[in-house]
Length: 490
Image (cartoon, rainbow, N blue to C red; front, side, top):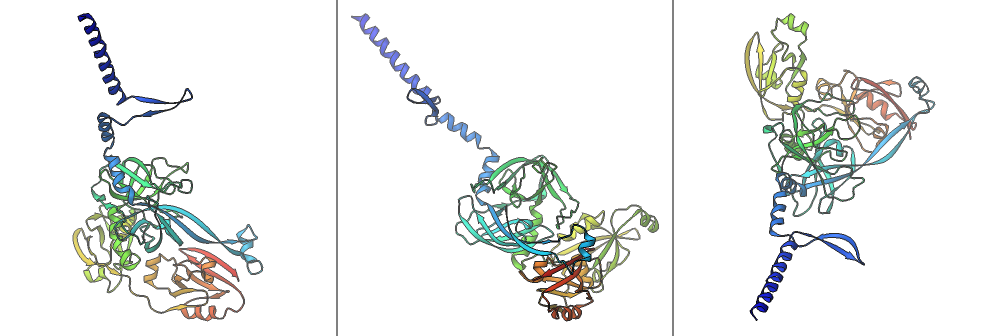
């Protein structure tokens, strides 16, 4: 009898242990999904406390940073109208010679493009690159949660390549702006944006990870870029078409830069991407919101490079710095005491080694800001403090049926637009859909001739433009040193 009880107890104990073992195994094992005797898939049961702990460990700093910033990263869809000129001639000589008989045709085409941006506050202000929305006629913003908004351009600065958009919405997520002045080469860098958005319809942003590769990179100016790209952040976090305007964030989820462009030989990401430091953008944000643009700063200083010949002539020990070649009377620099012949060695504690450094630093100065300029005068260092002013207001202007607002060429305009000539009239504004717009005239162009008549001032411009009777016009302009001819028939 006792033997039977012992056998039953052992069998029961084995059953209990087997059951507990199966329960323990089922917490972590993968179970097959079987239909008609075939394994269709492998499923997991409800995660165990151990697997939940592993999941928590997977949520590292990068994951958490992307979670913080991701909801405020938006996709930007832009529709632009571009005007194209076609000529029956392939040779510039014949094109110019027969322009009156066979003028080029102008046609327009709607172009769609995509970019990224990020919301910076609950009011719906969005920061992005200027080139993403330049000349946009319609802008649509899509949030990661699927909400869509029509956006308006609050302000745009071509030099810094920064633009501010505005949408109207409730409960909008927004990013936190960090400090790009304390970055460390080698620390994590996370790029978020909407790459190849024309292929991917999902509004969820993409996340790529790399490191801060270098700091204070200066990019040589190119023909396709009007901006000044100095002190850029270099990263190997992949930046692809559509990423422009999106945020570069640190491991804390704070925005440290605006993804802007890549350098590539294959037209794909090769690990050399560049972002505008967020501290540079912070100075522009208030200007864009308040004035719609970054107001041009007037210091009243003309500078030139210190060449080796100039160094020897002036008996200087170094070529570092820039020589003050001219000072405008009654300008902030003139009032402060800076004089022609001084050598500027630093501005706001930033060293100035060449004209490129000077332009870079001055382009980041805001109207009304106190500016500390250190110069060498006969080997003596002198510090000056002046208050940056806005460019002096323009005088007489003229507008004609061409849809162009122009002004007599003047020193202030030469500085503002970097003009190569002193004659003609300068285009200050181009009315959308006007004849001037369709021809391709741009702000900053200098008109020197209309219908073969010389244009020396606003009076000439008005007189000639108002007498255009035939539905045909030809113009000659100077665009930053390049001579260009336009003809248009309507």
